Image (cartoon, rainbow, N blue to C red; front, side, top):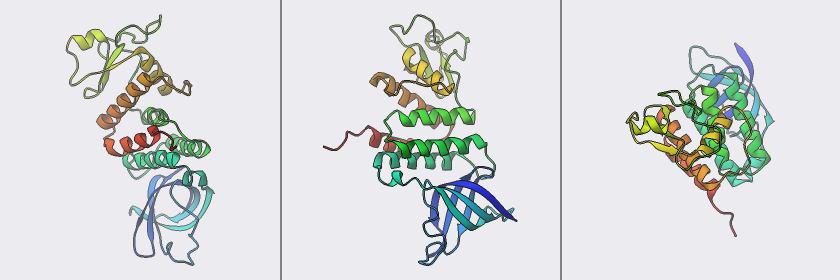
Length: 261
């Protein structure tokens, strides 16, 4: 059966000397892999038609129940050449594509995930990202996957964490990443945590709740808020999405590096 779909290239690996396996996140079929036979030959019709971060229209022979389908035709819809000129944007795009590749199993996926990655790559191709871009993207991904916690209430006593009157002097909550929950200062002091607790200020909680709720936030964040945001989201991804920190840390270091003189 021939299937027509739109897909974003997540990864390419050699299949033979002249062929590749292309892993896609598609709009209708979810995550799938295709064999692009002969794609590395000088006269191949696939040359220049797909690459990392491309959004393409593709035709493939579905080979159920096998997991490797056969790519028939491919036409680029959004090649995003800016990602090959901007090293910061390329680092963020590489991490985003690899995160989808790692988290999602092969097979059908929520179409909102395809739209999220497509929008993220478009944003990266449009402008150079700042350091806070990745935590924002990760929170949107966690929300779409249904893995984001409730940043507004204590998981133990259900007390509100974002109280009126502005930030207080101490932490507004503590993240118990091992236990998969957020605790108010009282429950944290009472020994409810299952491991090391990460303190979070009220400003950070407000940012976390806003992003997870789909609301806009200021383009620049205070340094202290960014540090807490980076650490909190990283811990949550590591504990609940099984994401090793190495690739994330590398991408964040590139985004945080000063501009060359």
